[in-house]
Amino acid sequence: MILAFTLGLTGSLGHCVGMCSAVTMLLRRHPALKDRPVGWALLHAGRLTSYAVLGVLAGAAGQILGLDIDLLRPWQGWIALIMAGLAVYFALAIIGRLPSPDRALKGPLAAWGRLMRRTTSHTSESRLNGPARAYMLGLLWGMLPCGLVLAALFTAAASTSPLTGAARMIFFGLGTVPALAAIGWLSGRAGRLAWPKYAAAAAMMAFGVQFALRGLANWGVVEHLMLGGVMLW
Image (tube, rainbow, N blue to C red; front, side):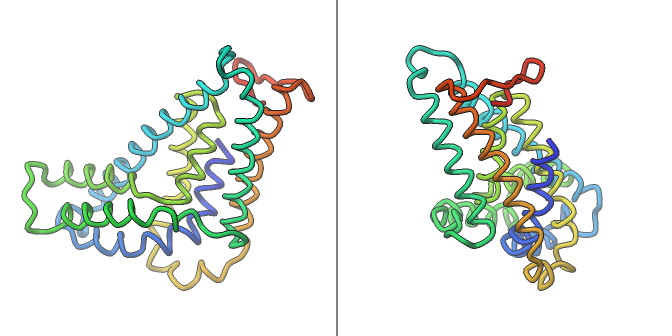
């Protein structure tokens, strides 16, 4: 949970400030949110709800891949090492050593942007108004195609548990709240800071190591490590 929160907190200082500035400016003009602290709280609650749902799905996928199923058993080691390689890729992308995965999300991002603009339009008709509209906008914001969210979903998959995956995504989302709340002040400042990117990359590397050890354990190179009923690797 701490690593997921760290990824959200440090990763958001650079990534979210750059990517979500326009989204935040758009949302600030919406009647359900303008000068309404409760509306903004519901907005972030909706965003965290979307993250939790995505975390359940990612955790379930990780659980399926981690189960001792005859069909999957020969491939579990390779699957874990591939996931470890992807975690390393995300870590290097965070610090700018490799192309950002956001480039591969241009199509979905454009479609999401059109949907968000229609939803936030003052002329858009909806039965949902006030607090309900704020929460709905948060749900939609949480579905933003984003490289940092993809990286967080790998941490959820590493949990091999739907509930733990949801919890990790919620902690990740909570970590992004401070940067998104202070996005105006951080604009132009966060981009010049190097340490948040390296801290986020270190958190991602930790999950890569976890996946790698899980793959080696499936091959009998190292022992599996259990923490209570949860397999760390």
